Length: 444
Image 1: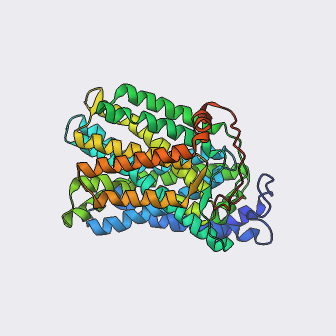
Image 2: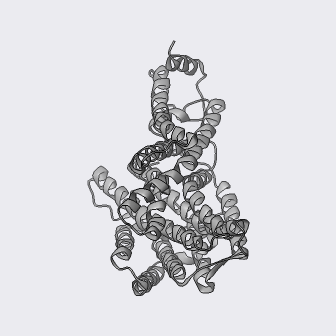
Image 3: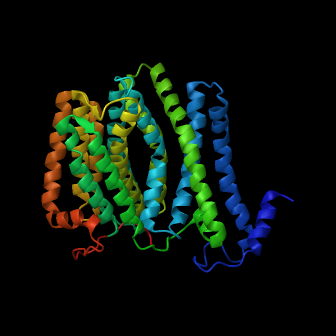
């Protein structure tokens, strides 16, 4: 008897669960649920196996082959991660599920960056790499990630409705995450102002991150709108679904952690053969590789009509970057044999200032819980401009542009500033009355 047939008999023998919608994997085709579930999981596992064998057996591969194999593993685990995160919302707070998703998705980035910071404790030349990786990944997430997700969500909304959609409407719960990001982005200016990331600042940011997780875990759980593989998993009995979701989280996290670093190395080695500067590779190619999972997860949300969830995932990732990641750098530096502060050179101070001003603009544009199309294109254009205008003067000019646009957005959304800053510390926030526009937000 085949494995999927045995699995199917077990599913058919399970009692019908009462805690999920009736359409989630039940009905006449219930006994075919095993095949529908087994195929995508088996495919993702098969795509990850070659990379895991190479990783743990230490087999030598060419940079191009490594890029292909490790890249497939990261992509496969990203799909598993997306399914697990969606189904997790059945049993736990939706906000906490998205926060967990964001933490797991950026694990590769953290592993690479903390490695640089730890090594910098004994080799000062790695300090620049640690800062470069952090600022590059941070700007990549907002300038490219946020922008593309909104552009995709609005384009698909236009296709569904036949009307031009000018903004993505977020849910009221996103104000809490936005409030955390607003506070973290303001605190971030301490780094360029002092020229260092002190251990004290690191502990403060780590504490703020713990408070963030506690806050989002208290949000009321909403029944998610599951589709495809996630709907099948969500239709399983609770005593089967929960262990399976945990296993999927563990599997995806393990594959990402195991494969992200060699994936990044393959990218770097491939780029090095083309004569690309190593500093730029660390700042951009390595973060692009390590952030591939969360980009894929966010795009999947957007394609399924869950634009608000997609942006919610990326906002959560930004909170993680400015709190957990930045806060961990001085700790890793100290454990690696360094001092109590990670000192930055002039170039890295400029990079941090540019990253902080970009974040402030992103927050200011979202204060009304609406992500307008102009903001998405502006963030994308400014992100691209930094490659066309390199150099110290250009970086300061871009900082000025970000700051001016942020001030304009803050003035325009001034009545939402205090509610947003207070959101992390209040149980409920009364949203200002407003006429809802056509939305590309989550489908509920």
